[in-house]
Image 1: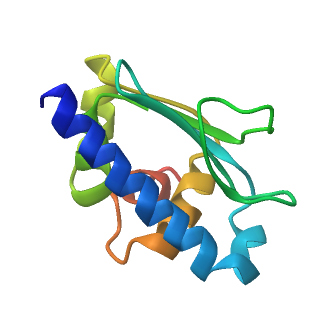
Image 2: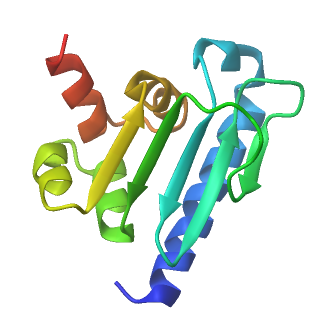
Length: 127
């Protein structure tokens, strides 16, 4: 994916996440934490769910994060849109790194995305 395409993709994801924060403000506490997404050479943003000022912020903020995801744009789109996306294979190839409580990301996606992501399926299989 070219950088311009990746930036457009990130903009769309950010917009979707901002809409989720606005629409579901009353249940955001159920998410259980903030998270950071880093797409090298494209974008870094923090989704602040907990606290007095929820929002999607450029870069890494001073807010405590419960989950961090680092991956390329192709892996991010696969993770968000493909239920059988192979998280472990992507991690093994170094194209995706997950740190922290993946349940935070899973619960947020549950608010914003009707389909289940590969990360949701992976978290369920780990139980």
